[in-house]
Image (cartoon, rainbow, N blue to C red):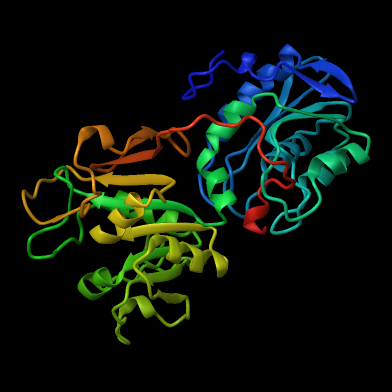
Length: 388
């Protein structure tokens, strides 16, 4: 059965794996559970953590519970599934957990999934791919040491494709980058006189503020600060500041006025004195940012797109025409259709296209241009990048 959005057949991926020198086939029940886990993973949001799904199968092949990761600071997919089973009074002793990424052995905002699996009495774990991030001992090693049978490789190609941008960001040691554009039908982000509040409807603004509450930092250029004087804070439906605020990053060589609203009073502001997106990401990563949202203006948006540093694109499209004004992009250096940057619809986190009030919310990711290696570098801990 093909997995949605991949065009590949899960049953054809890694049908056997060597375990202690012997070839062990993945069962039809495990294959079906991996399909379900990959679909569950798509329900989560992209960002500092990969999309992960987990399914617990009993000895008779029945799917008992399905978990997925809902974003930074929430239970990992494995812990989510185990918590559901506990709430339902289910005994998981002797069951198999099928998960799309190696269970973590990392202590941070949440506990290590490997220990939760052991405590639940699960006897068999099947996962798709190793985690490429290696800050601590691996979950698979810990599970095996506790007597849990561990196999990997089932659904590896699909799991890698599901999180290919996250794997790229981890490997490059840079933040995962979400680029946000609020524009009219004719791709304008402001009118001729510079007015832009508000192109998006209240529902789109609320969705954007919800995203701001999940990211680590939000970035604009000095031109946007000087012209729009944005606060760049996350706010609730009543306009009050949210409990969790992103770092407000301003990129550019011009000074940020002392009276600029972006400075705020909480100290969560940083001036990145560079016009190079690579340098900006390096500075932010070094300071702990793992998920960055780029908001504008046109030059900044274009610079990150031209550099190939955008992992996720969210566009709020208003049913409005201006005919003139500030374009969303300032040129990408493309002169022929053959060089056009291609994107694909992203079905994660609520779907590729959603209507919010009178606007459309478009969710995309870069189209894959190279073949994926189904055997990534041996790693250890699911979601360890987040430090939770």
